[in-house]
Amino acid sequence: LPGLVLVVLLKAMHIAARTLAGAREQLQARNAELQAGIERIARRAERDHLTNSYNRQSILEMVAREKARADRNGESLCVCLLDIDHFKDMNDRFGHQAGDRILAAFARRVRGALRTMDVLNSGGLPAVTRAEQVGPAGRSAFGRVGGEEFIVLLPDTSLRGALRCAERVRKAVVRRPFDGLHQVTVSIGIAEYRPGEPVSSLIGRADQALYGAKHAGRNRVHCATT
Image (cartoon, rainbow, N blue to C red; front, side, top):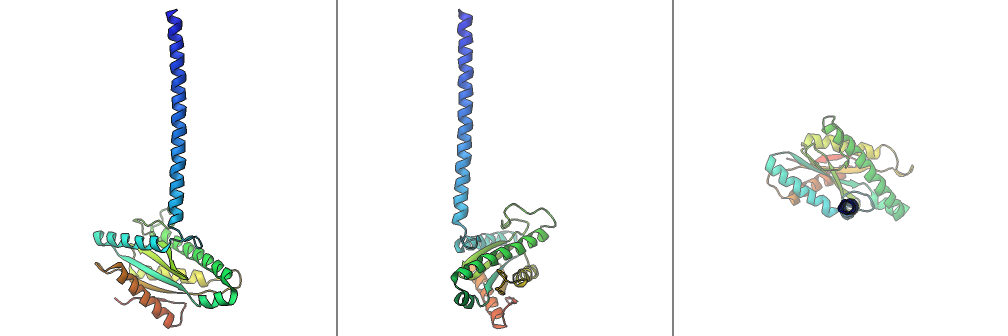
């Protein structure tokens, strides 16, 4: 009888342990699903839904973080302001739906050009999963600051490197018509970070360079004077 009782107790303990292990696995799976859901919501909150680029708040926060990192490490940093040429005329002529398609297609082309530059700047190392991740390999970030105006953040990038990147973007945009019929060009202004200057000053100088590109005839890249 004592032996039978021991067998029953051991069997009950084994069943309880298996039940507990199963419950633990289910809890871990649910926690992983919850974390993944939170991350998806966070990513959606930082994105512009039309162009799938970072929204204004997110990209400006990234600029501020990279400015702080450049101050700490003495690294170079550039920003590029992009503005689609004659976009208002295209909106008025073809309608807002066509304008939205152009914005979305424009963003895809810019991201494609930036991914290529990221791979080149990383010295041939494989690109990270999130192509726009800002990291030590000089990964770029791309965001929409309003209307047809966008910003590209280029950490650990000199003015010469930013000019090379901006020219690649400009050529990618003008290479072929959008939707097979809308020829689109872009003007780009570049500014290199001056140690200690506010973010507003950095972006303001890039905006002045953008205005210079517009004034000079559009479809070109201008750099802010040093």
